[in-house]
Image (cartoon, rainbow, N blue to C red; front, side, top):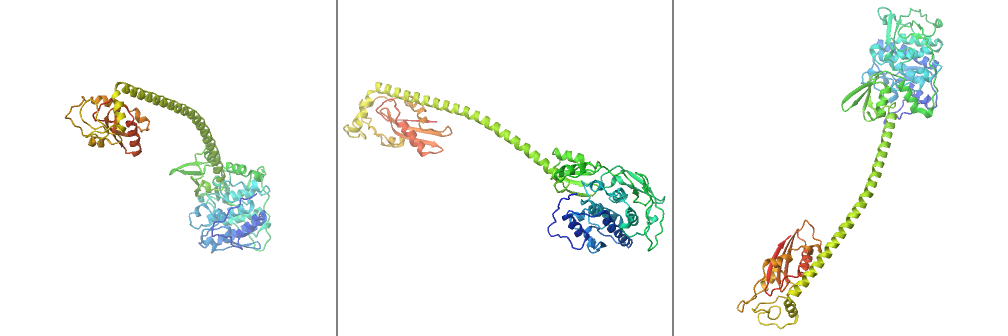
Length: 535
């Protein structure tokens, strides 16, 4: 079996001279423990652990807490007094120990089973683990039965008799290890039987799943120094031998499926789906969802109901981590996320294409609208200019005197009291202003002598009609949000003084509007008249 390398946590290392160091060395070289080697380690450990627990000691049993030298093993009590740091060591702890409390004999039964599983298969106990005979086809079927009973997750249903475990393991291959002391019948139930609920085993269920009541084993004398006695003949397939809580059952080995390293994800999925028990609870939005079987959980991950950031609890092991931190489920969560990202990118691309298509259509419409506005504006300007010219010609024809007065502004003879030219026609003595002033300045400069009379005034409406026509504002591009106030001092048909105020204030705009007003033609009259308007 090809094992996936797990990086060591920062600040941790493998202690030389331990069973963990030997296991990792063999893993690195592609090797593993043979059945005979594993039994030679497990049986003596069972005997030593039984003595420790009989003395009232509680320990954390894992490969880093076991000394290993030339095939000889011993419990390193200093290493077994604290929780291990390595992930593979923590996987060997019984579920009830993972909260930080050292375990009793019942917990050591689980840890021994987990270490045997890893030594033989190279994998760790937990989600996605395979049946041992699926990985090691020639593994004795009885070995798998014993591991199934040792790896029961619920401690209430797990055997606690280490002597019975040692006897059962020794009977698989008596020449592989020393003969252990006989199992103590006192550890069994009062009726001489021991019921183990193997449906709670972490090993995926097989042909012998379910509760199995096992009668007690008869006492076998153990004579020191005597040669090991070969076990009695095995019963037919499917039977069992009376060896206490760890019966040596003979089962038909399942059909072996060859592993393909290139199909790791598919193999992992098959391994997870081989366990139909609802054991997984997902915590999402503060609520527990489940329990789910592995198949149901994988379906929920594939549909995006659960993601790698949701917390997953394995109720059989009692461990709780983010889905992305479970080695068995992280690849599926990552694959589901990748699929969602691809769909999202495809959707985003389609939206961009659709927006570009719509944008092209909108641009065409906007272009047509802009051309229409420009054409309309040009036509309006042309009609406005034409109207102004027609009005100027009309005023010129009706008020010929205006031309005469204007002509005398520059070169006419100035009389007394005249500010900008000669005396005005029609009687009276009033100045003719030269223009270019403000409205207020024209008022201040205009001083009229009323002693000789004056022609009658024009009405204010005759000037206002010209000034109120705001067409001249278009030439200056006045924004619709700008308020404009215009004061015009008019004499002889033109604005000789103009004051423009804009809100918000814009000096350039004021100057442009004033220039446009000075170019307008008003009804001609020799006296100065002032008119105002607001836009």
